[in-house]
Length: 172
Image 1 (cartoon, helix red, strand yellow):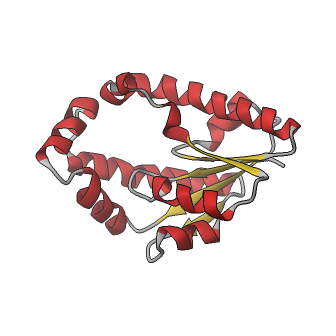
Image 2: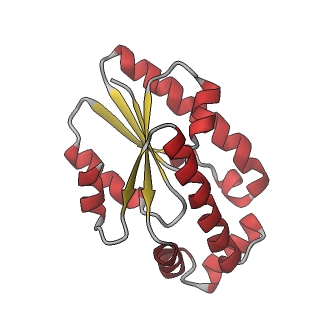
């Protein structure tokens, strides 16, 4: 029994695989979206994001420790950094999985979903002070860093470019 962490940038498909993971994994797993704890205040104020992410990472680690006492593994899907997990609890057993795809696919997914209307673009600008193009570029750089960080902890990298959400969940 351990903590399984599935990470990746915005637009990679983390949220879309959740129902499939819940469907395919047995009762020995408790599956969560990292952002279940996200508040409107944090969403609208990017300066709060780093502290919120650390607090939320700690919350999921603590939950995983409780679940371990009941012989249950915990799966958390969201933007999670290996270094933060290690910093918060160096003793917990965990495995990292990075969902990866091409830069073009990330851009296509974000432009088609996240930034599909002027209202959504205005919300992005208000929350992050970024344009969609700046946000996408930041996500491309984030993926480069995540690849290195997940490799450093011997995590698994799953390429999702051509996969449906269910196919990705099956690979996990």
